Amino acid sequence: MNIHKIQPANRVDYTMKTIDINGRVPGTDTIEFLRVERPYRHGKKFGPLVRVRYALNGVEQKKGFPLDVDKGIFLAIYDDELAETLRPIAPKIVAFLREHAAR
Image 1 (tube, rainbow, N blue to C red):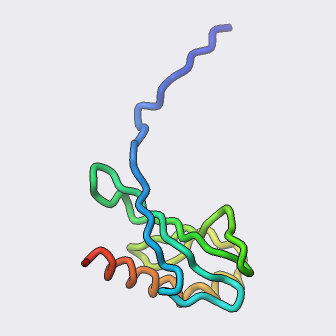
Image 2 (spheres, helix red, strand yellow):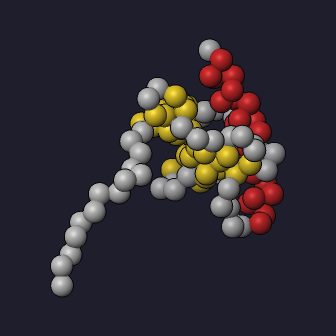
């Protein structure tokens, strides 16, 4: 049996820009938003998705919340109560990102 290693033809190289939102965007009783990681390719924003890093009860979590900036909603939050709690915060993060981009 022959095994071939294939380099993916659709590999995309990008860099991540980190935007500090700690204390600039309201959180919840237990969640504090720390920063947003946004992909850039060739110096331009790459796609509408960003990752929002957060701390739960003061402890930074490994995974962040994915956020669609175009739609102003968090994605892939499977806890309905948490999703409902975060729903009004997503547009505030998007507004901050737009304000930050205008500087």
